[in-house]
Image (tube, rainbow, N blue to C red; front, side, top):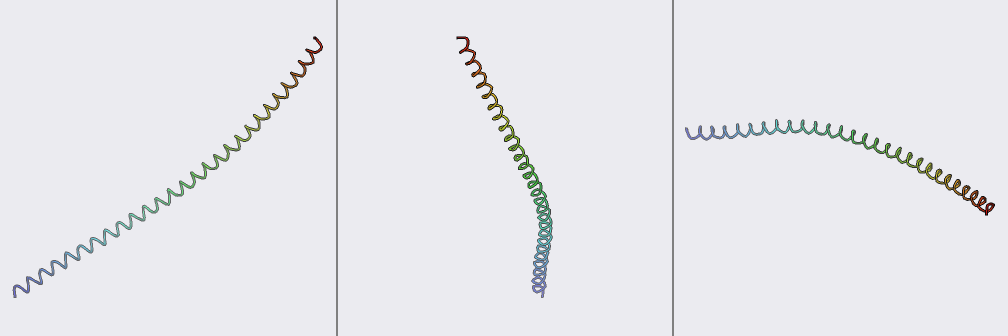
Length: 101
C-alpha cells in the first residue's frame, strides 16, 4: 500500500512540476508577444520617420538641381556677354590700328 501511495505521490509531483512548467511557458510567451508588439510599433514609427526624411532629402536635391541649373544658365549668359564685348573691343581696336597705320 505504501508503494502505491509513493507511486501516486511521485506522479503527483511530476504532474505538478509539468503544470508549473507549462504555466511559466505561457506567461513567458505572453510577455514575448507583448514585447514583439512594442517592437513592431517602434519599427512602424521608424519607417514613417525614414520615409519623411527620404522625402525631405529628395525635395532638397530637386531644389539644389534647379538652383544649379539656373546658375549654369546665368554663367553661360555671362560668358556669352563677355565674348560679345571682347569681339566688339577687338573690332574697334582693329579699326583704330588700321587708321593709325
